[in-house]
Image (tube, rainbow, N blue to C red; front, side, top):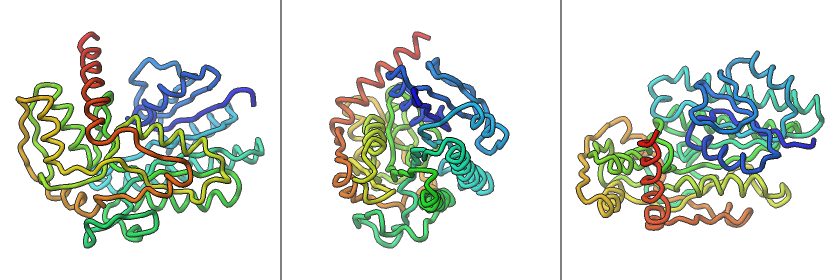
Amino acid sequence: MQNKVILITGSNGEIGQALIKKFIKDTSNIIITIDLKESVDDFSVHESFHGSILDLKLIEVIHSKYEISEIYHLAAVLSTKAEQDPTLSSQVNIEGTNNMFGLCMKQFKKYNHPILFFFPSSIAVYNTTNSKNKRVDENSYCNNPLTVYGKSKLACELNGVIAEKNDSIDFRCIRFPGIISATSKPTGGTSDYAPEMIHAAANGKNYDCFVTPESILPFIVMPDAIDAIEMLMTTAKKNLSSNIYNITSFSPTAYDLFEKTLSFYPEFKVNYVLNQSRQKIINSWPNIINDNLAKQDWGWIAKYNFHKSYTNYLIPSILTYYKQQGAK
């Protein structure tokens, strides 16, 4: 293959948008995308498919047109919506992912090489309801996720590991903590109180926070998330001792997030309006993550701690983002 064909599903989401911006810098990449919505930005992708990962005819069209090198399978029903519609979650998150594994098998039979496959999992696979303040690693507390979303992510991890045994894919997965982005708005995740809070402040609005001020979750910012994906996907297979890795950066309380945001937006106010169902989910997730395996195998280290996330990324990037939005 002369050019690398990269397929991104769920390309209009936060991670998808960031990955496209990175991949288009290499003009030899042929980037194709799938999303339910039409492209939200004028990126120079080779072809955008407007449709669903449940559409087997669409997947067959892609298979017939392209020899795929890498798949970044980001399409999913996120945590809050997954709890509201478990049937849809099962269809998209599990059946849709299995469709992508099926595409890999067809590609393998046709072109005789495995597809490098990235799957974004989540700390939602853990259930630490009765074990708070414990530092979880990849093999602990992940037998019985509380949520439909967590169960679907865990099922896809297991299916990916199994699929790798038939040589059609090289399956690699990161269990992400909450991700905070300055340049894309939150899209329905349970941890979205953090980015929602910051974006509200940047727009001169107050914020109704749906969790208690004492709630703690691990987070990273989007540049670190994208760097982690790139680091994992470019590491030689022989250096990887696992298919699945944790990463993290900082674990603030909701009140810590408010205080830090307030230091940049002195008029900002937060009201704590508890959502019991979302709080229950937060309480089941770990607040401290052990990411030593990622550090050991592929040199992972977060560039942005809690303070630098604000000073070096979030505040300057959000200011630029909203200036650009206002100019459109």
